[in-house]
Amino acid sequence: MNEYQDGYLIIIQNLIEDRDRFYPYISNSFIKIDIYIAIFIFLFLIVLYSTKFFTYVNELTFTVDKNFLDEYFSIFLVWTSSLMTFLFLFRFSVVSRFYLFLLTLLIPAVLQVFRNTEIITSILGRPTTKENFVTINLASDSVFRNLRILQFRRNLREYNLDINNSENVISSIDNLNKTEQINLIIIDLKNNTRVSEKLENYLLNLNKKVLLISDSKIEFFNLFISKETILNNTYLTYFNNDIQYGSKYIIKRIIDIFLSIILIFLFLPLFVSVIIFIYLQDGGPSIIKQNRVGLHGKVFEMYKFRTMYKDSHKKREDLEELNKNDRVIFKIENDPRIFKGGNSIRKYSLDELPQLINVIKGNMSLVGPRPLFEEDTKFFDENYMRRLNVLPGLTGLLQINERNTSEFETWYRYDIDYINNWSIYLDLKILLQTPISIIKNNTKGL
View 1 (spheres, helix red, strand yellow):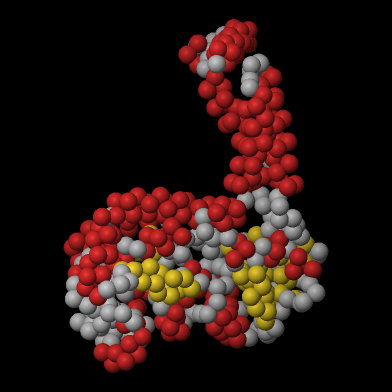
View 2 (cartoon, rainbow, N blue to C red):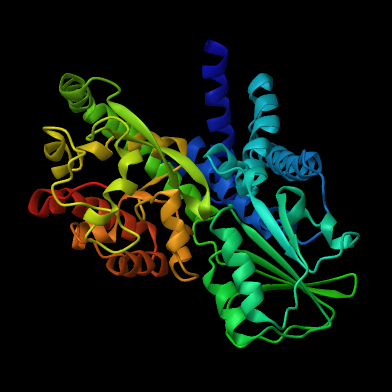
């Protein structure tokens, strides 16, 4: 311990000597090791982000190396050379060799994780390897099947369609989108230089990743952000309108996980009380699982406190004539399936509390459109399907504005408004307003 204390004094002495020789106008109060280290890290990040290999992961290449070993060594070389230069120039002569060895290996690994958002999103519950893509008119022996963007995803379906028949292309994608999870659409336009305005608008509003392959430069009706690459004398035009992807998705997931853990501990006594109450009213189980449709049409098991008698959902068809709402939303006034006390649980949305577990698992978010049943999706048209392009949530714009509405048009309007204006700030704003809305307006869960 004394050895490292002496080492600290030696480094400070070296820094003061250099100050006296090269920049005597700097005050002694600034001659601190942590300030020098902070400046070094700042300058290193500038150097690192000025290098093209770190800031830019090109998915439109034929790179199929999934172990990222080459990327690690590139970052390792930049980091090690910068660190050693810093230690030499500022005479950090007394440094633990063990910690120095750890730093040279660990920091490049951390930087590599932050460079590849696909790694972080996988850790946070949205692995790229679980994503699907569909192809339209892409030949089975096409060299573009070896693109990096395809290598990490699963081939869901292949179509051979007349690209000039927009209605057929849209209906094919839309029908599949109602039953399967689609994340990426690849269309080989061959010698076509544009698609119809209707198809273009549809692809832009899908909020998914789209890759267009063509022999010539593509002309568009709309102005939007896209990336164009020429590969093998072929134009690749890629745009990603998946709004909850990459760094924004990572921030959203971190907030969701952090707040959900806090809320679970905060409401733990309430959890236990509701479980006991339900068990006394109608036996177990107190928590049920329902299949709901989530992000990009992925079906997941949503947790919920049971407020109805057992197997009540199976009686839905028998009670269809009592449903006074539109064909998508199924709600009945004075629903006979709800046991005594169930309405009290629903009144303050206590039945939704177990969905905090879904949030931690990554099936849901704290904020987003409410997830509906699988059978409800069949009523969606191509516009309604847009509500599946963000994580479903416990609360949303609808819940803080018109919580008790039973018109799906109203649901849809608020959901699309949320999608078009989504931001982390909007999520936080909705979260803060939700408790007030529950107390003032009450609600009945779905």
